Image (cartoon, rainbow, N blue to C red):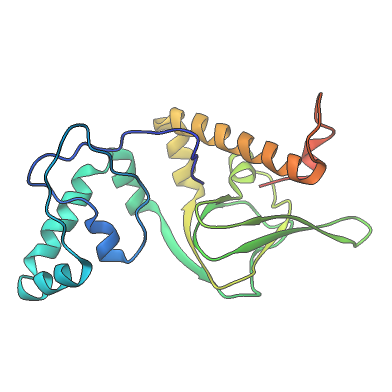
Length: 212
């Protein structure tokens, strides 16, 4: 889940350093904006030229990867070892309503849909998840069974954050959990406004309309 309302400085590039190499290596778009603090002169290397350089000098790949790793925070480096990668084919369930909540998911690519089955047997669409969204974090934090069934609308790739890792984050990095709560609150408000439209005053039973 990406909060686009705030800007956070991730790193400051110094003369001689590479910038944007991760996007070239992975084929994914940049997840940040580069802004010059003062007048700068830089060398632009196209993707095709960069691949030619890597073919001629394979050691360039290690150098580029080292630069990326050096810019990561200790938290990100630790999480890299703890996170599992999983894929779900279109039409298949990621988990079902009532299952044990033993992990949290982060959507990397694809699309998923959350459906709840009422006591009458009627199924209702609760929400959809796309790239960057968190799935199941509230249930994992509160150790409650899955409130909905989540299935893939398209072939989907996810990062799986195990229950133990989530507990470690709570203890070691409480500010991360605070940030998660802030982002989840923003999503709750956004989903309620989509369902009910603009409205004044307090919300009417928000838990009935959205559950991550």
